Image (cartoon, rainbow, N blue to C red):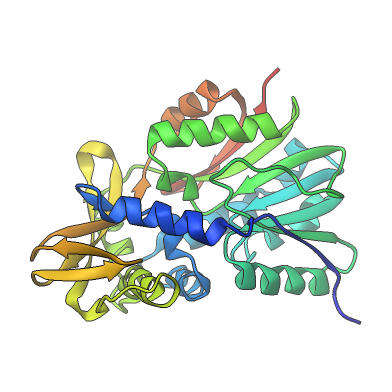
Length: 321
């Protein structure tokens, strides 16, 4: 019997056009940048899944270890009959650590990568036949609504992987404010946050020896070629990632190896040798610093869990009244 997934496509027909316009606006800006969401086509999602298995990349295994150790406490804090919403569901590995402990009334996976989302939620529906599974193909960085037919006594959003760090602090506050508007008073948010630490650990995590993070970053250029009709040669760019200590963030860039002109959607975009395209930030927080940020967005801290080395923190927040 085929697994049942209630699929909700929340990407409007004009989404590709608007994404192209957004992409082009960043490419012609000074300095050049793109939103990190453009890294996550199907191939990008697969490569990120591979990054999470690299020995240098501590966030995934650390967050999973925290979830394993704290899942009973998390279930007690969250309470019964929750409707679990996973933002940026990807391969949906971490949520499996919660499903048996929480036994939610239903599950909703939200991701921008349609094919990857479809496959991962079908696997969940197969492995957890008791669970009502929904999938929403949506850009959760934009205003959205919970899909029709999805519900439960109390929605609890799960935002793992320190993805909140991809936003600037101001953007993160805005995102959390938008999420608070979607949740009722008492609705929950379980969120993973990467902590400030020694820069050698951070630099190694984003420059793995196997070159998977480099391939993930460079895949953006392949996506430009295939989806946005770009005349660009990926071999003329190189991956660069480093910790910007003054801003408490990892920066990822694609650096031009030479003077060159690329064409994207009919526009000619000039790069000089050494010029970079800024593709991603990953901000790091202190435990108290993130609690203050969440409070500004209307969330009250209920609990948090860290690993013994203080590399990572999982916060449980509730929307205040």
